[in-house]
Length: 195
Image (cartoon, rainbow, N blue to C red; front, top):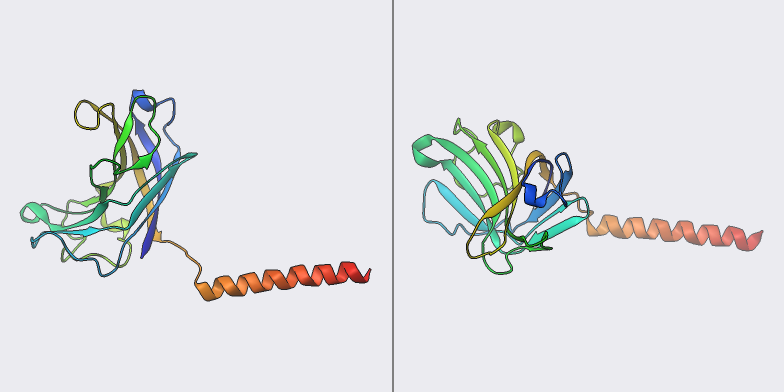
């Protein structure tokens, strides 16, 4: 399954301002197996591996294939629910260019609901979470460090504005479209040949 999201940059650390600016559009998607297994033995938090997590901010792009989708139902004794897609901080966890001396180390999308009403379980949602269920926080974050093992971290933050199914054409639709285009090209060539 693949979900896509849109966001806009709302905050940029001064160390990153040569590459990013407030208001830039963020587009991305993440893919996961609908039968992914919960790797956490908790009744409040579920953690499910994703297959890929990609994003673009104008011409700056990046991806991660090592991370998880976390689903929290009434974490901290009913304090809140959250939905988080986040890479694991391991070497090569994010494939993206450094910004000056700063290497990307963390990529996340998080939705938070302080009413703890968004989820009834910690099961992996097979439909994109409804943005209306998360009035408190809808954030995107891309963090960088000069030394990935230690030292200061600087971040770009964004506000997520939509989350939906990615529109991937079905194989049969793709073949039908290709056949139609081939027919139009053949017809055009036939007309030119008869002129």
